Image (cartoon, rainbow, N blue to C red; front, side, top):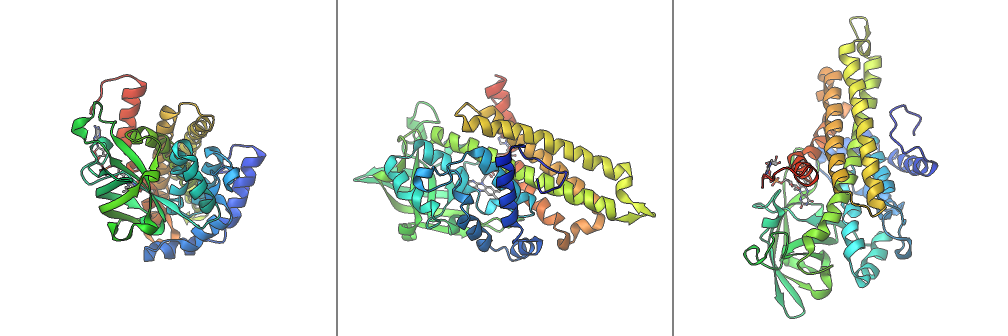
Length: 392
Ligand SMILES: Cc1cc2nc3c(=O)[nH]c(=O)nc-3n(C[C@H](O)[C@H](O)[C@H](O)COP(=O)(O)OP(=O)(O)OC[C@H]3O[C@@H](n4cnc5c(N)ncnc54)[C@H](O)[C@@H]3O)c2cc1C
């Protein structure tokens, strides 16, 4: 893949075709482009437009609705390649991970209405509103409430960290339809809605959050928002379970971004270590510099195998909660290991924006904390896979 030894492809011709085509597109958006977007904290609109036009953002939409009809394994390659090119797939990845909930639980009418429009680039579905100020990791405690009225619901509440909402036409929103106190199990009574932001008006307002990385993310205030009956995705009260499909997809796709980041750091570090001369020789000849890079390469490669397995299981419709969580844990740790290694390797220059190491370092760090913190991933494995007692 790309003629570089830092490769993580699946080894199949189709996979290499996808990675190669995405790499070609990404080559139009170089380090300078991403550096400028980062320094201005701007949305990389030109890049997202190009990706949309080329059809990569609709890769998961079935062919009958005008999409690519491919699976999470292929979508992963797209995101991996974006991050390996030095870019940041977070600008648009939600259109892929929100798709799982809509494809698996959306009505035929919803699919007919939205999917062809998304596929031809006329509509964006880039926002997923789950997290709230008082309900981060504990999603069952969200307070945004959808109350039944004639013809639908009226929603009131507040979300936080709703990313890309200002660059999206649709918002996949999780709200309570039955208060927590009235349900038998906390996971019950939550419902999923596909909110059309183009008609929401003042009922949905966003306040941007300034963050250490360029990530368009917001506090969102919802006041008396009417959502019609046909905006409900799947079954009323079953929203959280439906979201779990999307969350596995999200973890698998973000893992692919981490692989791309990890490969980028290893490539840049190994190249720099081979050329930077100190004490009359390349710094990479010193084992103190060379071995951490080799170790990061091994970690990224191993994590890639777990991510591939998770994606294939998801595509085959097999249970993949354990694999998706392990992929998220291992890929985010591997990319962070590679990032930290690159910071050491570049010495003082790691801190100069023109080398892009500090930018990618900030970007990849996010994935240890979001979309779910690695502590909660470990809690999932400890409790659901290894049957140990629950901490919550
Ligand atoms: C840049 C960015 C973009 C985001 N985009 C979105 C988005 O588009 N949509 C969305 O809905 N959300 C989004 N999020 C939110 C993200 O999913 C949450 O930040 C994440 O789920 C953690 O929630 P929290 O921040 O409230 O942390 P908390 O739940 O407050 O947890 C704080 C710390 O305590 C630890 N902790 C808590 N309970 C336990 C326990 N029982 N055992 C061990 N450790 C525990 C956690 O692991 C974590 O380290 C985004 C966040 C960021 C930073």
